[in-house]
Image (cartoon, rainbow, N blue to C red; front, side, top):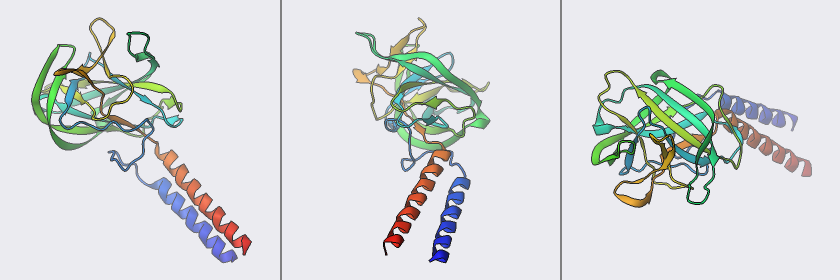
Amino acid sequence: MYLARKSLLMAAAVAALMFLAAPTVAHWSEEDGHKMHYPQLPDPTGWDVNVMEPRIIADDWRCTGTSPVKDIHGWFSAKGDGSYLIQYITTRIYSDQPAVGAIPSHPDELLWSRTYTAGEISIDGPFYGDQGWLDPLEDFYQPNDHTKYFQINKVDIEDPFIQTKGTIYWLGISVTPLEGATSEIGWKTSQDHWNDNAVYWGIDQQWHELFDPEQASVSLDMAFVITPEPGTLALLATAGLGLGLYAWRRRRERR
């Protein structure tokens, strides 16, 4: 009995260490976890909203577990399927200003901001769909503009923002292209809607809601997901092993 218990404990410890040592996967798939209301998946036939500086596009999410925001994943396209050359991508997290009367909710205080080079992000794809291009700052849109889109991933964020369960935040994105890039970059709209519309920062220094340019009553949300950090997953796995060992010991004691 002692040897059996010792073997089980050793197996559990090895399994936990293997889980902790597992490499972080940069891209995200639907089987992976998330730390928001639900993943806002890309609409393959939606719009891509211009995020080239000085533009900022933002969308809100509700945190479902207090933890660091270690991984951010989003879906993007290049206008006209042009060259996809990113020099910098800036991510921002804002507090939420709830809707007041006719004024919809929007980003409020800037809580956290980081700028990453192309070498600090990973790109997965391409994926395909007949997509339109939207630039609300220029009051311009073009249906059937491009067919490719990509998943952009920033994982293992250093000095991450600590989100609090039940709190609503806004994720803001802007992109600086490499010199010589032949195309602008857009953040893809989502097939999933949550809470209020996504917004863009206008030339009047105010936030404005995003709507489908061909159907003004249709709200637009952005495609992104906030995921659990690897440490949280490892902790959950270790906790599960611990519960299994406890149940085994209880069964042995009852015999």
